Length: 312
Image 1 (cartoon, rainbow, N blue to C red):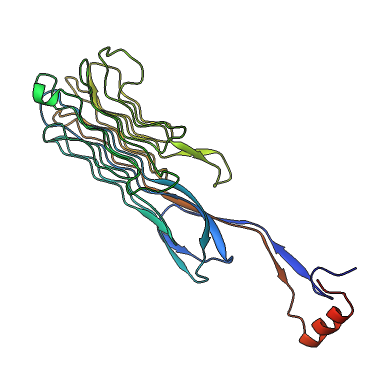
Image 2 (image 1 turned 45 degrees about the vertical axis):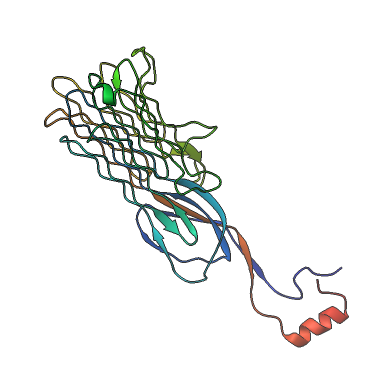
């Protein structure tokens, strides 16, 4: 019967390869295409600068699983985005995270959480930062704010979700940052009229991936800063927790390193109200298994094999 690869050739199978980049570097491809998990840096949390003002949580970095990326057949730069800086306790919007890039695939850094001046919305990004609350006694700022877009610029499938809104009535709490999410999960919302409701100001859920060889959740949104309720938590996937406004103040915490998670929002407590920085991203590249022959076939031998119907 015909031989699949011709006569007298040894074939070696190279197993599938996985390359993980926790920081920027160079990838040396060995296949024509590759798949990659590309997660950008998370956004830093924001800080408000008035009495009982609370900042928004940072948005998670863009989360993308991209298949069949063309290989240039040469060393390829890999950029792993850094997390955005948190804001100082004097008040500011958090910094956006940086993009992560490999080949033709780019994920956008997460949006910084909202902050001073005046209850600003967070920044758009892979996932959006949460909207800040200026002060519950200032009616101008005690309305429902504007949620911040995620998936900016848009990708399909979506690389992230919107940041949460601030409260309209009730407890002092800003919006949590958006997370990579799944099943339509978005960033945490601002506080409802009942400040005891669970989940107020939490960060948006992250999303799972098995690219590392294990089931790992990445890109959780940062929790919002708050006053008068339990500390809002960061979203699953490494989102930083929000700070609390109280007589001593509690800083927001940072998003998890190499997960692209958002940092927690901060308050304006002097010396203890800073927000958390976003977590750095990660790029994980998978190349499929492939076969190689021991040598090339002589053209005359190929001709003889075809004549003998022993080539396929």
